[in-house]
Length: 115
Image (cartoon, rainbow, N blue to C red; front, side):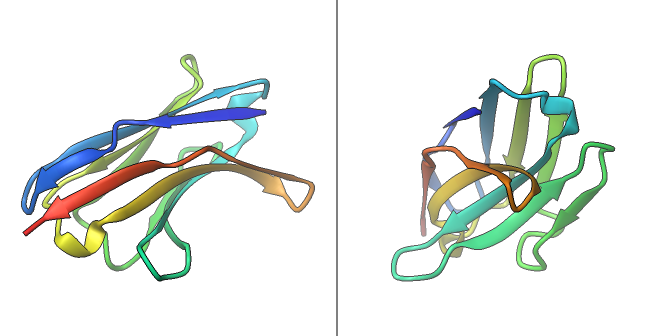
């Protein structure tokens, strides 16, 4: 399974970005897809999840601002980031998971939010 994340960049506070993560080598529609982020000097944290059935869940810090979605035909998961804050800065990683033995990570895409 390979995951390729893209869409990061430099944006001013209050701005928006759309991250994408394209999967290959998997039966994508069966995967729970997660977005994590890691800020400088901090541990990686779970930001958003979308299950194979389309159920979504968000970290409290991003609720109402971020939206996760998926397109099974394109084998792609998206993360729409709105109303960005400087504390949203970090490397964003996509993850495909079905259980302990099925846990794959993309290479990460950097989001930098300037104040």
